Every structure is written in structure tokens, then in C-alpha cells.
Amino acid sequence: MQDTEKTEKGTRRGYYGEYGGRYVPEALIPPLTELEEAMERIMPSREYRERLHDLLVNYCGRPTPVTHCGNLSRELGFELYLKREDLLHTGAHKINNALGQALLAKMMGKTHVIAETGAGQHGVATATAAALFGLKCTVFMGAKDVERQQPNVQRMKLLGTQVVAVENGSCTLKDAINAALRYWTSHQGDTLYVFGTAAGPHPFPLLVRELQKVIGTEARAQMQERLGRLPDYVVACVGGGSNAIGMLYPFVDAEQVKLVGVEAGGTGEPGCANSAAINLGRPGVLHGEYTMLLQDADGQIEESSSVSAGLDYPGVGPEHVYLHSIGRVHYGIAYDAEALAAFRRLAAAEGIIPALESSHALAWVFSHAAEIPAGSTVLVNLSGRGDKDLAHALQYIKL
Ligand SMILES: *Cc1c(COP(=O)(O)O)cnc(C)c1O
Image 1 (cartoon, rainbow, N blue to C red):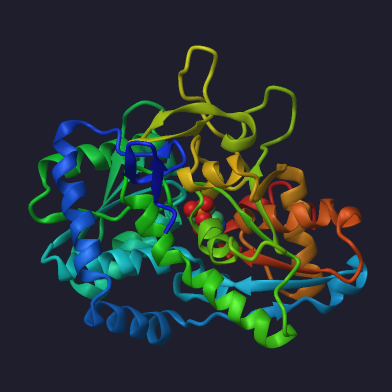
Image 2: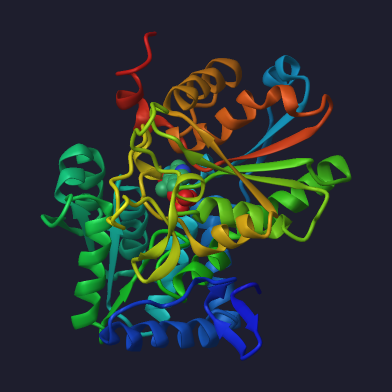
């Protein structure tokens, strides 16, 4: 595992190169340490592995298929394949993580799970897992997002979850994470914080990667069986980085495979708000980790912005910053207009409506088609389905 940095002084757990770590108030060390110990004790156990596997197969619909896009491949001159996380229960990869963490909470003897959510997708996934396991669930959501994302708020309530509108700061995801961490500080006895992406303080980046790497592990075996070899490119969108690390990590040791993470560039106008922390950020500490962050000249965290709410985060998981620093993964950018065009193009050409987040990964492939050698095999992680984005996307697309 690459969660430990080797230094002259030995190893530092929870570091990816110099990134990651656990930069939190003293009061959060005990629950993070308890979680780390539970990961080491419970996750390798046969009971945990069998119960999770059974749920991933029989409740969520794993393994998800890999679809060859015949129509687009003819247009593009290379073979385009999609890993179909959009076909999972609740419509995106987030359930892999929420279910794994909620099962861990249950087996730790916790009775309450909490989560942050921005667009509402991780909140819905956690609410779903909590309903299944009979756990009490509280989701912290920025007041602005509560207003913007009513359908997901209603879904969470229907699933029996309490949604807390956070009225601090910019009233968005960043503030919801702070509120959830603060709540956890004073309720660590019965509560586990189910973190939504491969970021935050150690052990969350490791835990989330371990639960999401099922995506790339499956895809690697599926491509090997189908083609007798691995793809030439593997591409995924990067918000906090969970679907991307889940897809890319199992390919890191396959040096011939080009790996690409795609960040959201926003409108692309000079100086515009965006969500491209690796491409446009600087190092700093946010939410307990040392990572790349969008910040102004004074080090204040900047508001991120993207047409897709799920990519709207000013930071990024530390393992991505490390994989960028060693040059193993290339991190590109797709802009709002390119993502909207890709959203439309996949729907019309293949009959699949992608999430606007996943559309960024597709957009990078479309805009770099000229550089991708003819006959190449390109595998894109379709992290979620786009039904949730229809109303929003149709404000920009004229049908
Ligand atoms: C939340 C979300 C993302 C972005 O989160 P990551 O942690 O970067 O994967 C991407 N795609 C979909 C469909 C999402 O719901």
C-alpha cells in the first residue's frame, strides 16, 4: 500500500509523499485512531469481507459491466469503453464507499453514522446504507446546497435521515465537512463519520481508496478477459478523487497504461472560479490533510465552481497529488461547455446519459482525440448516471 512515506526517520503512516497526514484538533485524534484500528482489525476479517461482497453483488449490482461504445469508436478512430458505475444502486460509485463504511460502523458497535454532502449524492448513499443497517443517520449539508438540491434532500428524508442545514461560511460543502467534524468531536462514543471522498485526515483517504478500488480491480480483469490485454488509457474525473483513485489505483503498477485524472475547469474564462486543485492550486491544509488547494494570494480558500456540483470541491485527495508529483498520472482539465457537449454526445450516440461529473472525463477524451493514436483502447470510468443533472443541464443545452 502506498499510504506510508518512507523517510530517513522511518515511515510516516497516512502520507503519500509529503501529502496527506492528520492535521486535526487534538479532540479528533481518538476517533480517527479508533477508526484506523477498526480498519486493521475488522476489514480483513472473513465476516466483513463476505458481508460486503454479498451486498455489493446482491444489493448494489456488482460487478458493473464494461460497455464498448461502437458508434463513438467509429467516429473517434479508437476503441472507447465505459466502466458502468452508473448502473449501481443509487446511480453512482458512492454506494461502494458508503456501504463499506456503514458496515464497518455496524461491526464497530456504533449506532449512528454522520456524513457531509454537497450535491447530495454521498448523503443519499449514506442514508441508503444507514437504512439498510438500521443505523441512525445525520447528514450535514450547506444551507445553500439544501436549497439547490431539494430532490436529494427529500430522498434522504424518505430514507429516514436527518438533514442538518449548515449556516456557516459559504454555506456549502466545505462548511458541511467542518460541521460534521465538529459534531464527531463531541459524539465519538456512538458515532462514526462516513467520509464521502478519498480526502480528509488519515485514515479516510486510505479507507475510501480501499473501498473504491473494486472499480479498477474489476475493470482490469474485464479488459484482460475481453481483449487479452490492458487498455492503453484509463480516464476518470476528479472531484475529491474517490472514483478516480478507485479506478486508477489498480492500474498504477501497469506502466504501459496511461492514466488520466480530469479536473473541472469551470467556465474557462480568465480568473474564473474552477475546481482544478492540482492544476491551479497551491499546497496547504484543509479538512485535516496537506494537499493542493484553490486559494487566494493570502492563503484564503477560494470558492470552487463547476457546472457539475459533485466536482465542486476546493481541495483534492492526497494520493492524487502524490501520483501527479511522481508523474504517474496526468491530470487534465475539462471546462463546463466541453462537459455539457460530452453529456449530450454520449446520450445521442450511445443511449447513455452520463452524470455531469463523468462527462468531464469523456470531454477530456473527446478534446484529446487527435492525440490518441488510432486503434488505441480507451477506458473511461462512468462514475454515475445523469438523470439527476437533466434539469440543470437543460438550462445550457438547447434541444
Ligand atoms: C460525487 C461524484 C463525483 C466526484 O467525487 P469523487 O470523490 O471525485 O469521485 C464524480 N462522479 C459522480 C457521479 C459523483 O456522484
